[in-house]
Length: 370
Image (cartoon, rainbow, N blue to C red; front, side, top):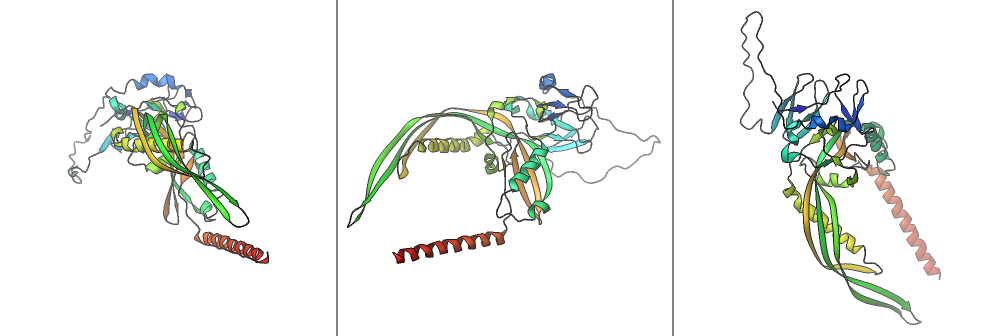
Protein backbone atom coordinates (compact mmCIF):
# COMPACT_ATOMS: atom_id res chain seq x y z
CA UNK A 1 0.00 0.00 0.00
CA UNK A 2 1.17 3.54 -0.76
CA UNK A 3 1.22 6.40 1.71
CA UNK A 4 -1.39 9.01 2.56
CA UNK A 5 -1.17 12.35 4.35
CA UNK A 6 -4.17 13.42 6.42
CA UNK A 7 -4.39 16.56 8.52
CA UNK A 8 -6.19 15.91 11.82
CA UNK A 9 -7.75 18.64 13.95
CA UNK A 10 -5.82 18.85 17.25
CA UNK A 11 -9.05 19.83 19.00
CA UNK A 12 -11.44 17.06 17.92
CA UNK A 13 -9.51 14.75 15.62
CA UNK A 14 -11.62 15.56 12.56
CA UNK A 15 -10.10 15.89 9.10
CA UNK A 16 -8.91 19.42 8.28
CA UNK A 17 -9.47 20.99 4.86
CA UNK A 18 -8.16 24.18 3.26
CA UNK A 19 -10.72 27.01 3.42
CA UNK A 20 -10.45 29.18 0.29
CA UNK A 21 -12.19 32.15 1.93
CA UNK A 22 -10.11 32.17 5.13
CA UNK A 23 -6.92 31.00 3.37
CA UNK A 24 -6.41 28.78 6.41
CA UNK A 25 -7.03 25.19 7.46
CA UNK A 26 -10.45 24.66 9.02
CA UNK A 27 -12.11 21.75 10.80
CA UNK A 28 -15.66 21.21 9.45
CA UNK A 29 -16.67 19.50 12.70
CA UNK A 30 -15.64 21.92 15.46
CA UNK A 31 -14.86 24.99 13.27
CA UNK A 32 -11.33 25.29 14.65
CA UNK A 33 -9.04 27.29 12.37
CA UNK A 34 -5.27 26.86 11.95
CA UNK A 35 -2.63 28.91 10.19
CA UNK A 36 -0.78 27.24 7.33
CA UNK A 37 2.53 27.76 9.12
CA UNK A 38 1.32 25.53 11.97
CA UNK A 39 1.18 22.59 9.56
CA UNK A 40 4.61 22.97 8.02
CA UNK A 41 6.10 20.40 10.36
CA UNK A 42 3.74 17.78 8.95
CA UNK A 43 5.09 18.41 5.45
CA UNK A 44 8.57 17.49 6.64
CA UNK A 45 7.33 13.91 6.92
CA UNK A 46 6.83 13.59 3.16
CA UNK A 47 9.87 11.37 2.68
CA UNK A 48 9.23 9.17 5.70
CA UNK A 49 7.55 5.82 5.34
CA UNK A 50 4.43 4.93 7.22
CA UNK A 51 4.31 1.57 8.94
CA UNK A 52 1.13 -0.06 7.70
CA UNK A 53 0.36 -3.15 9.74
CA UNK A 54 -1.29 -6.00 7.85
CA UNK A 55 -2.64 -9.22 9.23
CA UNK A 56 -5.13 -12.00 8.66
CA UNK A 57 -8.31 -12.58 10.54
CA UNK A 58 -9.00 -16.10 11.72
CA UNK A 59 -12.39 -17.55 12.50
CA UNK A 60 -13.15 -17.96 16.18
CA UNK A 61 -14.73 -21.35 15.70
CA UNK A 62 -11.85 -22.86 13.76
CA UNK A 63 -13.97 -23.17 10.62
CA UNK A 64 -11.95 -23.40 7.42
CA UNK A 65 -13.36 -21.33 4.56
CA UNK A 66 -12.49 -21.49 0.89
CA UNK A 67 -11.89 -17.83 0.07
CA UNK A 68 -10.49 -18.36 -3.41
CA UNK A 69 -12.86 -16.24 -5.48
CA UNK A 70 -12.66 -14.36 -8.72
CA UNK A 71 -9.65 -14.48 -10.99
CA UNK A 72 -6.20 -12.98 -11.04
CA UNK A 73 -5.45 -9.67 -12.77
CA UNK A 74 -4.12 -10.01 -16.29
CA UNK A 75 -0.61 -8.83 -17.08
CA UNK A 76 -0.59 -5.05 -17.33
CA UNK A 77 -4.19 -4.71 -16.16
CA UNK A 78 -3.16 -3.01 -12.92
CA UNK A 79 -0.38 -0.95 -14.49
CA UNK A 80 -0.67 2.65 -13.39
CA UNK A 81 -2.95 1.89 -10.42
CA UNK A 82 -2.00 2.52 -6.81
CA UNK A 83 -3.86 1.64 -3.63
CA UNK A 84 -3.92 3.54 -0.36
CA UNK A 85 -5.38 2.88 3.08
CA UNK A 86 -7.46 5.66 4.63
CA UNK A 87 -6.03 6.45 8.05
CA UNK A 88 -9.47 7.47 9.33
CA UNK A 89 -11.65 4.49 8.41
CA UNK A 90 -9.27 1.91 6.96
CA UNK A 91 -10.99 1.92 3.57
CA UNK A 92 -8.97 1.25 0.45
CA UNK A 93 -8.52 4.14 -1.99
CA UNK A 94 -7.47 3.34 -5.54
CA UNK A 95 -5.90 6.00 -7.75
CA UNK A 96 -3.79 6.20 -10.88
CA UNK A 97 -0.20 7.33 -11.32
CA UNK A 98 -1.19 11.00 -11.46
CA UNK A 99 -3.66 11.14 -8.54
CA UNK A 100 -2.13 13.40 -5.90
CA UNK A 101 -5.06 14.44 -3.70
CA UNK A 102 -8.59 13.13 -3.36
CA UNK A 103 -11.13 12.10 -0.73
CA UNK A 104 -11.93 8.73 0.78
CA UNK A 105 -15.01 7.24 -0.95
CA UNK A 106 -16.08 5.63 2.33
CA UNK A 107 -15.75 8.36 4.97
CA UNK A 108 -15.20 11.43 2.76
CA UNK A 109 -12.04 12.59 4.54
CA UNK A 110 -9.64 14.58 2.34
CA UNK A 111 -6.31 12.83 1.76
CA UNK A 112 -3.03 13.67 0.04
CA UNK A 113 -0.85 11.04 -1.62
CA UNK A 114 2.49 11.86 -0.03
CA UNK A 115 4.76 10.00 -2.44
CA UNK A 116 3.49 12.04 -5.40
CA UNK A 117 5.21 15.17 -4.08
CA UNK A 118 8.65 13.96 -3.05
CA UNK A 119 12.02 14.69 -4.65
CA UNK A 120 11.81 16.14 -8.14
CA UNK A 121 8.01 15.74 -8.10
CA UNK A 122 7.60 18.43 -5.46
CA UNK A 123 6.06 21.61 -6.93
CA UNK A 124 7.95 24.88 -6.54
CA UNK A 125 4.79 26.82 -5.73
CA UNK A 126 1.01 26.69 -5.54
CA UNK A 127 -1.74 29.28 -6.01
CA UNK A 128 -4.36 28.47 -3.34
CA UNK A 129 -8.05 28.43 -4.15
CA UNK A 130 -9.72 31.77 -3.45
CA UNK A 131 -13.19 30.79 -4.70
CA UNK A 132 -15.32 27.93 -3.37
CA UNK A 133 -17.98 25.61 -4.80
CA UNK A 134 -20.74 28.21 -4.32
CA UNK A 135 -18.72 30.65 -6.42
CA UNK A 136 -18.38 28.00 -9.12
CA UNK A 137 -22.17 27.49 -9.24
CA UNK A 138 -22.71 31.25 -9.34
CA UNK A 139 -20.12 31.50 -12.11
CA UNK A 140 -22.07 29.02 -14.20
CA UNK A 141 -25.32 30.98 -13.77
CA UNK A 142 -23.55 34.21 -14.73
CA UNK A 143 -21.98 32.49 -17.75
CA UNK A 144 -25.47 31.61 -19.01
CA UNK A 145 -26.75 35.18 -18.81
CA UNK A 146 -27.03 37.32 -21.93
CA UNK A 147 -26.53 34.44 -24.39
CA UNK A 148 -28.81 35.33 -27.30
CA UNK A 149 -28.90 31.86 -28.86
CA UNK A 150 -29.00 29.78 -25.67
CA UNK A 151 -32.18 27.65 -25.47
CA UNK A 152 -34.48 29.28 -22.90
CA UNK A 153 -35.09 26.04 -21.01
CA UNK A 154 -31.39 25.23 -20.72
CA UNK A 155 -31.02 27.18 -17.47
CA UNK A 156 -33.81 25.32 -15.72
CA UNK A 157 -33.24 21.85 -17.17
CA UNK A 158 -29.44 21.78 -17.28
CA UNK A 159 -28.42 19.28 -14.58
CA UNK A 160 -25.09 19.70 -12.81
CA UNK A 161 -23.55 16.23 -12.58
CA UNK A 162 -20.31 17.13 -10.85
CA UNK A 163 -18.39 20.09 -9.47
CA UNK A 164 -14.83 19.50 -8.34
CA UNK A 165 -11.96 21.72 -7.34
CA UNK A 166 -8.72 20.45 -8.85
CA UNK A 167 -5.14 21.61 -8.58
CA UNK A 168 -3.83 21.32 -12.14
CA UNK A 169 -0.08 20.86 -12.71
CA UNK A 170 1.50 23.61 -14.81
CA UNK A 171 5.00 24.22 -16.07
CA UNK A 172 5.94 27.89 -15.81
CA UNK A 173 8.52 29.04 -18.32
CA UNK A 174 10.70 32.13 -17.90
CA UNK A 175 12.63 33.41 -20.91
CA UNK A 176 14.02 36.48 -22.66
CA UNK A 177 13.07 37.10 -26.28
CA UNK A 178 15.28 39.16 -28.62
CA UNK A 179 13.37 40.11 -31.74
CA UNK A 180 13.99 41.77 -35.10
CA UNK A 181 10.77 42.15 -37.08
CA UNK A 182 10.23 43.92 -40.41
CA UNK A 183 6.81 45.05 -41.62
CA UNK A 184 5.41 46.27 -44.96
CA UNK A 185 2.98 49.12 -44.38
CA UNK A 186 0.88 51.42 -46.56
CA UNK A 187 -0.81 54.74 -46.11
CA UNK A 188 -3.45 56.05 -48.52
CA UNK A 189 -4.56 59.58 -49.35
CA UNK A 190 -7.69 60.24 -51.40
CA UNK A 191 -8.95 63.42 -53.09
CA UNK A 192 -11.06 64.51 -56.04
CA UNK A 193 -11.30 67.27 -58.57
CA UNK A 194 -13.99 68.13 -61.06
CA UNK A 195 -12.89 65.36 -63.40
CA UNK A 196 -11.34 62.52 -61.40
CA UNK A 197 -11.08 60.75 -58.06
CA UNK A 198 -7.51 60.13 -56.92
CA UNK A 199 -5.95 57.65 -54.48
CA UNK A 200 -2.29 57.94 -53.59
CA UNK A 201 -0.68 54.92 -51.88
CA UNK A 202 2.62 55.32 -50.04
CA UNK A 203 4.67 52.25 -49.11
CA UNK A 204 6.83 51.98 -46.01
CA UNK A 205 9.30 49.53 -44.54
CA UNK A 206 8.92 49.48 -40.76
CA UNK A 207 11.51 47.86 -38.50
CA UNK A 208 11.12 46.96 -34.85
CA UNK A 209 13.87 45.47 -32.66
CA UNK A 210 14.15 44.89 -28.93
CA UNK A 211 13.93 42.47 -26.03
CA UNK A 212 10.99 41.27 -23.94
CA UNK A 213 11.25 39.31 -20.71
CA UNK A 214 8.63 36.65 -19.95
CA UNK A 215 7.89 35.39 -16.45
CA UNK A 216 5.65 32.41 -15.84
CA UNK A 217 4.40 31.43 -19.31
CA UNK A 218 2.05 28.62 -18.29
CA UNK A 219 1.69 25.28 -20.06
CA UNK A 220 -0.46 22.66 -18.37
CA UNK A 221 1.36 19.45 -17.53
CA UNK A 222 -1.66 17.15 -17.45
CA UNK A 223 -2.69 15.05 -20.42
CA UNK A 224 -6.20 14.89 -18.91
CA UNK A 225 -6.80 18.61 -19.46
CA UNK A 226 -7.40 20.21 -22.85
CA UNK A 227 -4.73 22.84 -23.49
CA UNK A 228 -7.19 25.29 -25.07
CA UNK A 229 -9.51 25.07 -22.05
CA UNK A 230 -6.69 25.69 -19.57
CA UNK A 231 -5.33 28.61 -21.59
CA UNK A 232 -8.80 30.12 -21.90
CA UNK A 233 -9.16 30.60 -18.13
CA UNK A 234 -5.85 32.44 -17.86
CA UNK A 235 -4.37 34.62 -16.61
CA UNK A 236 -3.52 33.54 -13.09
CA UNK A 237 -1.93 36.08 -10.76
CA UNK A 238 1.46 34.56 -10.04
CA UNK A 239 2.18 37.21 -7.39
CA UNK A 240 -0.24 35.33 -5.10
CA UNK A 241 1.66 32.04 -5.42
CA UNK A 242 3.10 30.63 -2.20
CA UNK A 243 5.68 27.99 -1.41
CA UNK A 244 4.20 24.54 -1.83
CA UNK A 245 2.63 22.80 1.18
CA UNK A 246 0.55 19.66 0.91
CA UNK A 247 -1.91 21.22 3.38
CA UNK A 248 -3.23 23.48 0.59
CA UNK A 249 -4.44 20.35 -1.22
CA UNK A 250 -6.60 19.07 1.64
CA UNK A 251 -10.25 19.12 0.58
CA UNK A 252 -9.50 19.29 -3.15
CA UNK A 253 -8.42 16.96 -5.91
CA UNK A 254 -4.93 17.23 -7.34
CA UNK A 255 -2.92 15.64 -10.11
CA UNK A 256 0.81 15.49 -10.54
CA UNK A 257 2.19 16.12 -14.00
CA UNK A 258 2.30 13.36 -16.59
CA UNK A 259 3.59 15.64 -19.34
CA UNK A 260 7.21 16.60 -18.68
CA UNK A 261 8.69 20.07 -18.97
CA UNK A 262 10.70 18.93 -22.00
CA UNK A 263 7.50 17.85 -23.72
CA UNK A 264 5.98 21.30 -23.04
CA UNK A 265 8.90 23.31 -24.43
CA UNK A 266 7.48 23.45 -27.97
CA UNK A 267 4.19 24.92 -26.73
CA UNK A 268 6.04 27.38 -24.48
CA UNK A 269 8.18 28.54 -27.42
CA UNK A 270 5.06 28.94 -29.52
CA UNK A 271 3.35 31.08 -26.86
CA UNK A 272 6.45 33.24 -26.28
CA UNK A 273 6.94 33.77 -30.01
CA UNK A 274 3.28 34.63 -30.57
CA UNK A 275 3.20 37.06 -27.62
CA UNK A 276 6.40 38.75 -28.81
CA UNK A 277 5.02 39.25 -32.32
CA UNK A 278 1.74 40.63 -30.95
CA UNK A 279 3.56 43.06 -28.63
CA UNK A 280 5.80 44.38 -31.40
CA UNK A 281 2.92 44.64 -33.89
CA UNK A 282 0.99 46.79 -31.41
CA UNK A 283 3.73 49.45 -31.69
CA UNK A 284 3.22 49.82 -35.45
CA UNK A 285 0.43 52.36 -35.80
CA UNK A 286 -0.63 55.19 -38.06
CA UNK A 287 -0.81 53.07 -41.21
CA UNK A 288 -3.77 51.83 -43.23
CA UNK A 289 -2.35 48.34 -43.73
CA UNK A 290 0.46 46.47 -41.97
CA UNK A 291 1.88 43.10 -42.98
CA UNK A 292 4.74 41.16 -41.40
CA UNK A 293 7.54 40.75 -43.91
CA UNK A 294 10.08 38.87 -41.75
CA UNK A 295 10.43 37.86 -38.12
CA UNK A 296 13.54 36.71 -36.26
CA UNK A 297 12.95 35.86 -32.58
CA UNK A 298 15.71 34.36 -30.45
CA UNK A 299 15.01 32.94 -26.98
CA UNK A 300 17.53 32.80 -24.14
CA UNK A 301 17.80 32.29 -20.35
CA UNK A 302 15.03 29.72 -20.44
CA UNK A 303 13.99 28.19 -17.13
CA UNK A 304 11.03 26.03 -16.05
CA UNK A 305 9.24 25.82 -12.71
CA UNK A 306 6.62 23.36 -11.48
CA UNK A 307 3.39 24.83 -10.07
CA UNK A 308 -0.15 23.84 -9.13
CA UNK A 309 -3.00 26.14 -10.20
CA UNK A 310 -6.59 26.07 -8.84
CA UNK A 311 -9.37 25.17 -11.28
CA UNK A 312 -13.06 24.37 -10.76
CA UNK A 313 -14.37 21.80 -13.25
CA UNK A 314 -18.11 21.48 -13.83
CA UNK A 315 -19.87 18.77 -15.84
CA UNK A 316 -23.52 19.14 -16.78
CA UNK A 317 -26.07 17.16 -18.80
CA UNK A 318 -28.92 18.48 -20.93
CA UNK A 319 -31.06 16.37 -23.26
CA UNK A 320 -28.61 13.49 -23.01
CA UNK A 321 -25.56 15.54 -24.00
CA UNK A 322 -22.72 16.46 -21.66
CA UNK A 323 -21.23 19.94 -21.39
CA UNK A 324 -17.91 20.76 -19.71
CA UNK A 325 -17.06 24.06 -18.02
CA UNK A 326 -14.01 25.37 -16.20
CA UNK A 327 -13.51 28.29 -13.82
CA UNK A 328 -10.30 29.89 -12.67
CA UNK A 329 -10.25 29.14 -8.93
CA UNK A 330 -8.38 32.38 -8.24
CA UNK A 331 -9.98 35.01 -10.51
CA UNK A 332 -13.37 33.47 -11.38
CA UNK A 333 -12.88 33.60 -15.16
CA UNK A 334 -15.39 31.12 -16.59
CA UNK A 335 -15.45 29.27 -19.92
CA UNK A 336 -17.43 26.44 -21.49
CA UNK A 337 -19.39 25.40 -24.55
CA UNK A 338 -23.15 25.96 -24.74
CA UNK A 339 -25.93 24.58 -26.93
CA UNK A 340 -27.40 26.77 -29.65
CA UNK A 341 -31.11 27.35 -30.27
CA UNK A 342 -31.05 26.98 -34.06
CA UNK A 343 -34.54 28.42 -34.39
CA UNK A 344 -33.54 31.60 -32.55
CA UNK A 345 -30.36 31.83 -34.63
CA UNK A 346 -32.15 31.64 -37.98
CA UNK A 347 -34.82 34.11 -36.83
CA UNK A 348 -32.07 36.55 -35.87
CA UNK A 349 -30.21 35.92 -39.12
CA UNK A 350 -33.39 36.50 -41.12
CA UNK A 351 -34.09 39.75 -39.27
CA UNK A 352 -30.56 41.05 -39.89
CA UNK A 353 -30.80 40.08 -43.56
CA UNK A 354 -34.15 41.86 -43.87
CA UNK A 355 -32.84 45.02 -42.21
CA UNK A 356 -29.75 45.01 -44.43
CA UNK A 357 -31.91 44.54 -47.51
CA UNK A 358 -34.21 47.37 -46.47
CA UNK A 359 -31.25 49.66 -45.82
CA UNK A 360 -29.73 48.82 -49.20
CA UNK A 361 -33.03 49.45 -50.98
CA UNK A 362 -33.47 52.75 -49.14
CA UNK A 363 -29.97 53.90 -50.06
CA UNK A 364 -30.53 52.99 -53.72
CA UNK A 365 -33.85 54.87 -53.77
CA UNK A 366 -32.25 57.99 -52.32
CA UNK A 367 -29.44 57.85 -54.89
CA UNK A 368 -31.97 57.56 -57.74
CA UNK A 369 -33.84 60.57 -56.40
CA UNK A 370 -30.71 62.75 -56.54
